[in-house]
Image (cartoon, rainbow over all chains, first blue to last red):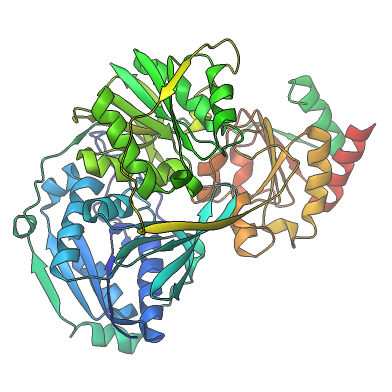
Length: 255
Length: 314
């Protein structure tokens, strides 16, 4: 049925292995000279789309990123993983600092309509702001159903049967397309882009847009007043045996 | 001002995070109204009526809310907001709340504030970013403030002494056909629930396999503890994901947290470092978990854990 056009959101974030540092002005964290990568949950989203194409369920995958010029590197990674083309909504660094999932999901919603998407997959959350909102807000702006925190996606009679990771275990929902899926950790294991595919990705088309082209108001809704280091914990004492541990815990009234 | 708390429950019982959310809502000031939407959920309404700090309960009992789908609940919350014009709408930052609140927020054209750990004023909230490696204080400029609450950051509201009256929630459209709930497979356990347990024992890669978790269950039985796991243990297939403590799993802050065979990756620390007392048992004295542990025991867990269980059995 290879008929679906799948859009995938890809956010450029500070690499998960980097220890972030609060900026001297205490209004953000240091990003200059810090390694960035695709948000790991968005890598899973791309991988899921590529697998749908390999199963001949999807016909085209469009990777989308909203942010500063360097997001194009993130999009090249998505193209190297198997996306067919990319759309970069370029937002100046300063303006980007003021916006969040609300503005981004509006831009993605407009692109979903323009591109006549059947399915939009995004990571369940970005590991920088930890908001966990974009997919749900995107679905809401489009009035599409949402299947969040997905750990399995199966096509069944033209609908999607999605297994979701919830607090007590798993649940299964059925959603009609078009819809939004947000990828959780166990949905798949993303592939590494191979060198030949990285080379091929350089030739794949990348469309550039501005927020104004999409008619989205970029007025900030949230103001960051300050960013602090978290309270630190001091290392305590070492105990020598299980017996000593139990007696210490009894002393402090823990057990 | 007045705050709407969207109650999370199973139709049988109130989910504990709702009690923490009610406490957070009361910090805003003004009335706290709870919305209970479910299917045959009268028991929950009775339970909630006893809870301190609730001024009124709105009830929407309908077959359509089976599975608590965001597509069905959103129009209900919007209709409720239209009638009562709350200054704040809040929910626990759980799978339920995280799924629902942003969908409502988009319809109100409001930027929700996720997973707050503090309330500075009626428009200023504290939340963690970068997996807890930085703490942001943010101000909402929206006319209505939507926020989700990290349960471990607020005390639970008392379960007795309240006297909230109930009334029917406003009628709302129910979208048909968009999505349907097929079922769930929840992990059955007689032990306390991970995010509300007073004591949590978690195992990591050092447990070597899933079968060895029985050592932790035996100790947990002595301490009335919940059992969790690191992402490494989940990824290795030792235990199911709903046991995961960490940035991508559950955030816990019990009185006592015992990390067994866990090295202490940053992602794991994000999920447990607000625990009151932390114990680490690991044979590697260099494991980063010892840097946050109040009590560290450098030992073979396969020896130390059964010893603890035995001592506690005496």
